[in-house]
Amino acid sequence: MRSDALQRGFAEFVGTFALVFVGAGSIAATGGQDLTAIALAHGLVIGVMVSAVGHISGGHFNPAVTLGFLVTRRIEARLAAAYWFAQLTAAILGALLLRAVLPERSADPVNLGAPGLGAGVSAGQGLMIEIILTFFLVWVIFATAADPRGSFRSIAGLAIGFTISLDIPRNRCRSGRIRLRVPVPPPDGACAGRAARDRGRRARRGPRRSELDLV
Image (cartoon, rainbow, N blue to C red; front, side):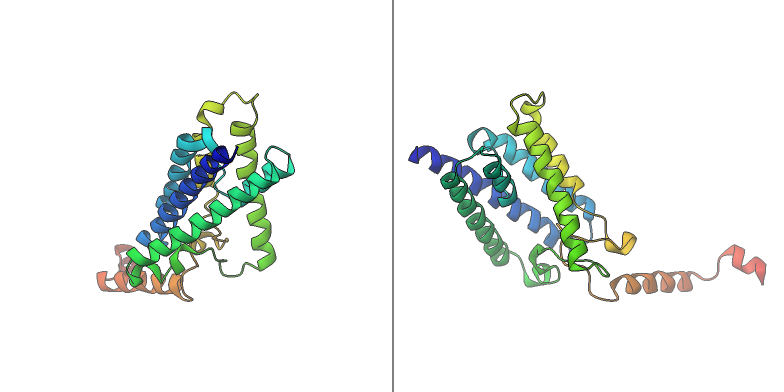
């Protein structure tokens, strides 16, 4: 039993470490601007890790998922505690290694991928969106990987990975919505600065033909 718990805990450690290192690393690499790349990085690493070690630990990689398994009595409290310890330790180690290997100019602007609220989004709204997105994740995990009646058990990693990618909300400059699983929003005026640069480029190109016709 002890050896089995160690195997499961180590599988959770590796999967969670990969999620943090690759996921937060993609945020730092793109400066938090390429939401598609960030979503794919998170979804792919989860899909790969769930497929690789899901048969050992179930591929939770998330304390909320482990809590769901504990509440539904699919995992013992002692094993759940081991999972939480492995997940939190792996997340901390992944963040520390990213801090060590990434230059400050890449890590600092996005706060090393730490979650943050978009402009105009309150803490209550952010909490509600996070609850909904986490519900989607746990729901898909239970429907594909946990339920023995599920017809898609063999491709659970793919379904879970896609769910993670879908949970990455849109850029706040386009929709004004929250960015929960992506970095802290751009500094104030970032969107306005982008618009000003666009106006500057248009001014350098000169008036368009339609504008000349109106003169």
